[in-house]
Amino acid sequence: MLLTLLGCPTLDDVPIVEGPHCASDAIGYVVDALDGDTIDVVTTAELSVSEGETATNDTGGGGDSGGSTGGTSEDTRVLRIRMLGVDAPEISHDSTEVADCYGDEAAAWTRTTLLGRQVGLSFDRTCNDKYGRALAYVFLTDDGATYDLEECLSGTCSVPEDSSATGVVLVNDIVIRYGYARVYEDFDDIRLAELLYDAQTAAKAGNRGLWSSCE
Image 1: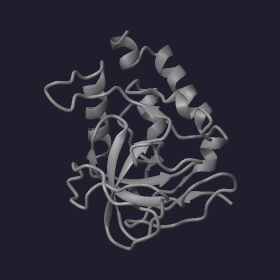
Image 2: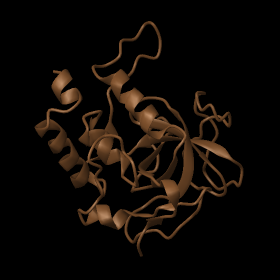
Image 3: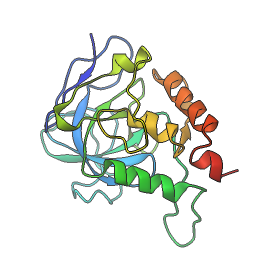
Image 4: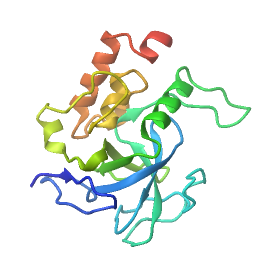
C-alpha cells in the first residue's frame, strides 16, 4: 500500500507502506528550528511514536524534551524531530561552546526554509534516537499538495532548482544536496539511504555549502 502524505491542516493517520516501519504518517507545522537537522513540529489529533518524547507544549518549542509519546493523545503537542539520515554541523549552545564549521549557516537555512510551514512526517524502522527525538523524513506539504514516499524509493523524487525549497520536496534530501549537512552514516540502512547518498555526492561535486567552506 502506498504511503501518502495528505496536505491537510491537521495531523492525519494515513495508510502505511508495506515493509518495516514504526509509526503512521503525520502532518504538522514547524514552530522552531533548533539547528540544521532538528525541528519542533506542532501536531494535532492522534499520534503514536513508541518510546519517543515530545518537546514542551509551549509552541515556542525551545524547551527541553519531556513527556512520552508512547500511546496516543488527541492533545496538541510539540514533537521534536531529528531528520532521519541527516547530520548537520553542530551549533554552539552557550558561551563555552564553539559551533562546527557551517553549523550556524545550516541552522539558519533550516529555520528560514521550514519555520511556520506545514510539513508531513514519515517514519522508518527506528522511530527515536537516544535523546528521545522522533526520527522522520520531513516533507514540505504546503497548498494541499500530496507526496508519495514510493516516488523517492523509485528514484523520482522532486528536487527544486535551487535551495529555496518551494513546492513539495523531501527536506532530508535538499538539506544535504545544498551542502548544509552530511549523510548520517549510522543510519545507512534506512529506506532512503541511496537517495541521501546521491544528494551528498551532488553536493560534493557542486562544491556546495560545507563542502567548499570546511575542511
